[in-house]
Image (tube, rainbow, N blue to C red; front, side, top):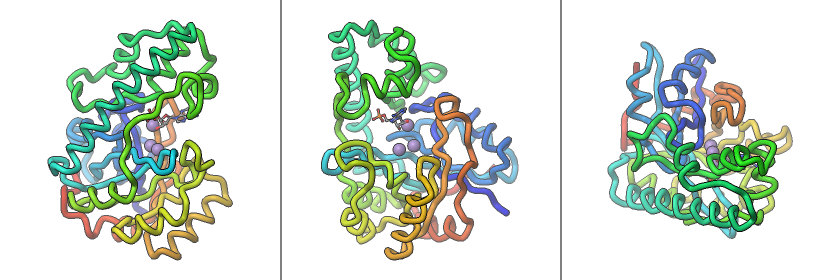
Length: 291
Ligand code: AMP
Ligand code: MN
Ligand code: MN
Ligand code: MN
């Protein structure tokens, strides 16, 4: 049975393993197919592609930050053309705003007496891969690690709870794309996408992506819903399987591995091979990368 995991992060965004290490762990976890989906960047795909053992398939991808009604909505996107001007322009804007927003959070933390520095946050975010400087994404997990180092939180989770979770004293919002427009952009770039962890939209929506939004995304070409995600409980998993069935889109299952940040968990959720084939069939923007 082909084992397929369609959502993972490397140190090019907020994971802790380099792209090469992510592939290595995926192989060790018995996976045959892995999508590397760093936040708002394909900066790690080239390195990952150099480390594929024979018989292993890499799906080039990313997790696109979208926002709706004050909540973050994530879209895992695959096989799009990374040079597409419309999509690339948005990604550059998102990444650059991530950096200014992180600086703003550092300012807020310092106002609250937390001794983090921008230099240290950059070091953590860039650790191990300075060559991708332009394509890196800075995220709150990097800040969280700096907060822990500064002694103002016990661990990353505690740093989110105390300081930088949505609505926290040092939280700052950032630019993100409208989810319907995001699906249109990815489809126009020849890619396909799945709605990531729909029961976990951080912010004012109180958890779940609203059905009316998912319907509008499906109408413009959303290919799947990531109903199988380690953050979903049984009821949520069942509910989102039902939504996917009602809307006639595929179900994906993925680990959303972030290395030691989430605990290594590649392959803890997988995607049915038929669902995978159905999801990627319309993609024209980039090829699957085979070892
Ligand atoms: P950002 O992309 O900068 O908005 O940060 C969001 C990222 O932080 C997510 O992709 C997760 O990796 C991580 N994250 C979100 N909420 C939490 C939390 N409560 N505890 C630990 N990590 C979190
Ligand atoms: Mn993340
Ligand atoms: Mn996400
Ligand atoms: Mn993710």
